[in-house]
Length: 319
Image 1 (cartoon, rainbow, N blue to C red):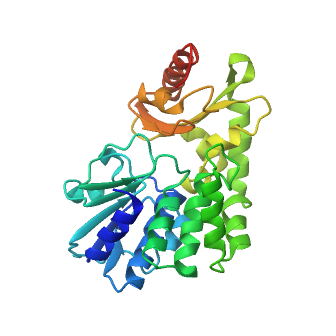
Image 2: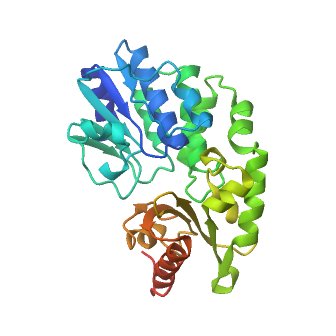
């Protein structure tokens, strides 16, 4: 369904539970908070399912919105979720009863009864903004988390996925009187000392390939310990590598307990399709930003992702 039909669906139902994805980012959290507030503005009962992976930076947007224990929804909506494998553990009981999925990922698996997909949008927040506008449900409290959703998924409007529509959505949200400067400072101009130390370690341990155009960086548990860093200090590290002169494509490999490595890939999409790279290892996402998870050591994960990158770069064309 399109965004107008999605808005009509939301008008016609009630008693909502909104789901976010594993390792939640600004887009899924911002969409959930904005949509929940919009539904409440319409007089609906709406909650967001708690997400224990949410960092302190993001969790505050859900204050007063999370579902109480025992809440039994009639309507379940997912935001910014492309596949059931991205549901947190506490969302698993709802995997077979998601009524509406709102998403912008080309890798969307159409697991919900109804899906509102706009794969040309930089952020799911752009779609939720359109839906809320169609519902005539908008104010500063709704607009602020939606601005976070839109701006964080396009790197404060500098990533290649940024479009005129992205700017139009942001402008309309700004017109609601949100604290734009404070939000931008919080999400794009502030780093902890732990993060700064971790970036230094990453630069020391990264490897360059393909004439310096591909940067692959391990983020081992030992490096995290050396920097005193936590998950809150690792947001969008793949984009950090892309700031290096001459680098076109990046992969960060985050080691986790239990022999698991999570890989984030960022590419110049016209030269390397990140979705295809990560699909070789069971992942997915967007042409310019995708991810996957592999079992093994950091060194094994680096060999695996480099082989996937090499294979795609060897292809005659990227469609």
